Length: 54
Image (cartoon, helix red, strand yellow):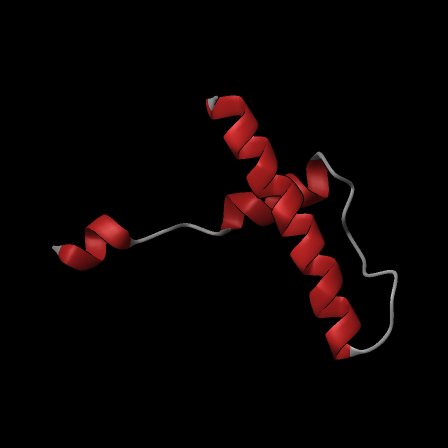
């Protein structure tokens, strides 16, 4: 029961990144730089969610 309540589907987030933000490839090399880049992209998605909700 608890697992069902907390379950989050992450696929729509990556679909939004690809379709709306045009994020299909990393523009940097190296794991730490790629982690920073995906972090910035995900922060943009989260800010958009908060802006839409008000």
